[in-house]
Length: 96
Image 1 (tube, rainbow, N blue to C red):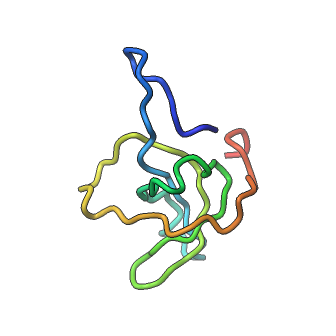
Image 2: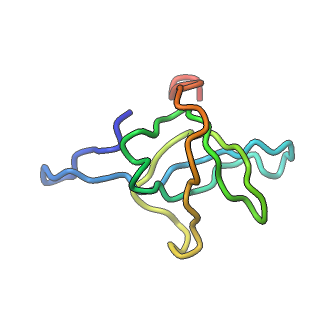
């Protein structure tokens, strides 16, 4: 999935946030978290990719399950994706 889409007036809009599910075996964490997509990763990240993200005081593996142009949280609280761990899509939107 390309991270560019078309806005209502024909202009290109860059997707800013990735919806990430973190790989932590706790039922209460079975939800998505918003992470900023660094400019250097914006053209190469896709749904199904494994990524390294900060989570609390540690770094964990997460999986990209979606994208958004907006977040419900304060932008200064949103952390950046650190890196793509596996640039192969392990699943697609149909499997979600």
